[in-house]
Amino acid sequence: MTALVPLLVTLPLLGAAIALIAGRHRRFQVGVSVVTLVLTLAIATVLLVAVDSSNLPFAVSVGGWPVPFGIVLYVDRLAALLVMVSSVVLLAVLLFSIGQGAADGDDDTPVSIFHPTYLILAAGIFVAFTAGDLFNLYVGFEILLVASYVLITLGNSEQRIRAGITYIVVSLVSSILFLAAIAMIYGATGTVNMVQLADRMTQLPQETQYVLHVMLLLAFAIKAAVFPVSFWLPDSYPTAPAPVTAVFAGLLTKVGVYAILRTETQIFLENDLNTILLIAALATMVIGILGAVAQAELKRILSFTLVSHVGYMIFGIAIATPAAIGATIYYMVHHIVVQTTLFLAVGLVERRAGSTSILKVKGLMRAAPVIALLYFIPAVNLGGLPPFSGFIGKYALFDAGAAVGTPLMMTLIVAGIATSLLTLYALMRAWNLSFWREEDDSTETEQRTAYLQAAPAAATVTERRVIPRIMTAATAGMVAVSVALTIFAGPLYEVCARVGGALLEPITVVQLDESVDMSGEVQ
Image (cartoon, rainbow, N blue to C red; front, side, top):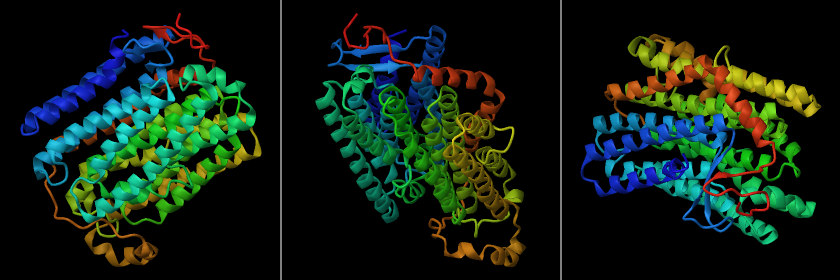
């Protein structure tokens, strides 16, 4: 079983190399990309079942180097679950992009560049989720960020280049902070291995722990788009091609949330900044959703809701109880799937109507009822309408917060309920204007939505384009996965609850190729 762990990283990298070599053979590139992600999904599923049944994490010391000098790939329930969900999302978005490329040519997603870069992005995400030390977590971030720089600027339009520059500058600032924090942690403890840090960090003076803690938290908060360092996201994501925006929205910020979750529960559990995290979660939820309500363009609405719902995850991490951590992980899985699905549905709207402005798009219920359904189901799910997974995740978070019962916790619960209602309002307003409104309703609608006229303009209006069946099928598949999160909420939540309990327990053993105890000695 150990041999499967390195394949999570090596398969996407090998696939990227093959796809790059076969740059002139479109079908071969497509086949390599699809097969690579299907194999990764299968391996992650097998590892999740094995880890969950054995109740022991898997670890491989790459290259045979002893801990802490070698690269350790570490797969516990959390890593296996997130790799599996990420593989599903990456595969669905890839199929969507294949359909778009077949219909439009290479204008937005040039195949010779897109497929190798996309697989490198996948490798970076998997490295981040399976990294056993902080430096290789940093390497994972840099791999996915380098790939994202390319993907976000595909098409070479002025708007995309401008957004890409903002994204690059912010990401570099975050990376510099992260690397500086790693250097300081190594200087203070003599290691960056997470197993060893869980023990050695508690031996440092509290002041030193706080400095290291704040630096890491700030670096991860930028990547996760936590307020007030979330300003870059709403202007960066909407400019990219639809498949790129979908995978960015679903996964990239969750890698930052994952890093916060991992370090808060396993490295800084006894040096918490939970009050600061609660305040940041409150501001992220409220300011993010107020920004969404003020938008008149579908991609910007979704980008602001993305920011606001990161606040729910930070809220769960800050509660710091097993129930709250389990609820946070369930909500992460829900949000990865649902947010990606919504962006894919908006991609279909853009092709069918030629715009994503809710002031310009109208009559889609009659013209495209399938797209209307594909948008509606994840929209009400994200809004937290019962019995969908969004409601289940939020209820579990609120229940965990109410169990603590402090005034700040109760304030967060009220803010979370208000954010959920405003999310539903923003998404259903877009549904009403874009799908239900008929061509002759424009005068009354303009009077009721006059306040949106000052909102940032939508992306450039394009001609209406044909929608290949594979694009609709990929979106429908993601809708089915989002519904499955509700149907199978019981078993999935039980897995997440076991993850939450394990993360708050001391790390005692890393199993398989080499076992290491808390002191880092090879057994």
